[in-house]
Image (cartoon, rainbow, N blue to C red; front, side, top):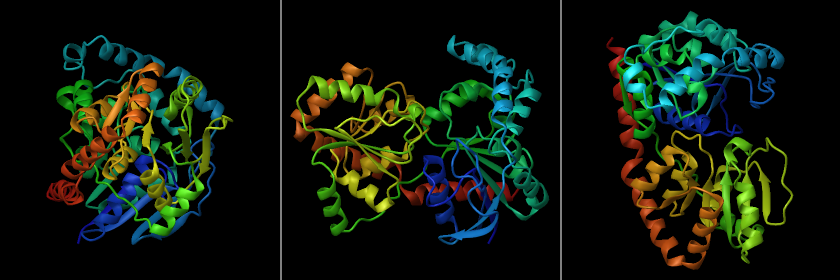
Length: 413
C-alpha cells in the first residue's frame, strides 16, 4: 500500500467550502487503497487567518491529519504587495480578453515578469505556513503522490514545486484575475499532473498555458449525499416555509453577486409566497428582509433535507470550477438556477438538458422564476433530467479509478 498526501489550506467537518469538501470526499475514499494523510493549516476563518485548531496530529473518518500553524498575517503589507503585483496579470488577462492567446502565449508560455514580487505576495498571504512547507520538504520521499487542492493559495504555489514530479494539482480554476499571475505559468507547467473538474476548466487553462500545460485529464468528483431520516425531513418541513429557493455555502458578496437585490425586486414585483433561505457562515452585512432567512451553519443531513424540500437551489457565483452544491441538488431531482456569467454553469446547463438553468440579468431571473412557479410539471420533468445527468457523469467508482491510475503512473516515474 503506497502513501499519499492531500494538501489543502483548511480541513474538517466544520469547514464550509466546495474545495475543502472536495478534498475530504477524495481522501476518505482513497483510504481503501493508500495510507492517506492530509496536510493543512490550523485556520478555519479565511478572512482573519487566526489559528483556531490545535497544531499537531488529528484524525477524521479514518484519514490522518497533520495541522500546522500559519505565519502571522499582516493585512496592510499584503494589500500593499497586491497593488504592486497587478501589472503582469493585467497584461496576461488583456491578451486573453483580446483573443490573442493562441498567438502570443505559444511564443511566451512561461513568464518571469513580476515573478519575484508575486512570490513575495504569496509569502505574505494569510495561509502561508513555513512549518507546513518545511514538513513537505523534509518528508517528500515518504509519499508516492502529493495532491494539492486549489491553485491560488500560498501553500500550493510553493509546495507543489517542492517535488513537482510526484505532484497532482487539482486547481479548481475559474476565469478570474489571479489565474493570470506570472507564477501560475510556472505552477501549471511544472507539476506532474493536473486533474481538472470540467471540460470548461481544462479548455480555459489550455488557452492560457498552451503547449507547456502539464499532462492533464478531466477527473472531477462524485456526489456525496448524506442520508436524512424521515423524522428530520419532517422537522425541516415544519421549521421552514413551504416554498423556497435555497443557497448553500459561504454567504459572501462574491458568491451571491447581486442575487439578494434581484430576489427582493422580484418579491416587490410579483405576489408569491416564495422565500429565500441562506445556509452557511456569514461574511457580509446581513440583509434584513421578511422573505430572506439565514440559518447559519447546518449539518450535512439537514442540508440534504433542505435541498429535498426546496423549490430550487440557486448558485449565483461566477467563480466556479464545478459546483458541488449544484450536482448534489441535481442528483436529488431539484432544479438549479445559476449565473450565466459562469462558463462552467453554461456547460452544466447544456449537458443537463436544462435541469440547471442560467439567468443573465435580474429581469431574466424574474422570468425564469415566474415560468417555473406557473409550470410545476416542467420543474418535475427537469428534476428527472438532473438525476440522469449526475448518474451518467459523476459516478464515484469511475472518478476514483481515474485518480488511482494517475497516482500509479506517478509512482513509476
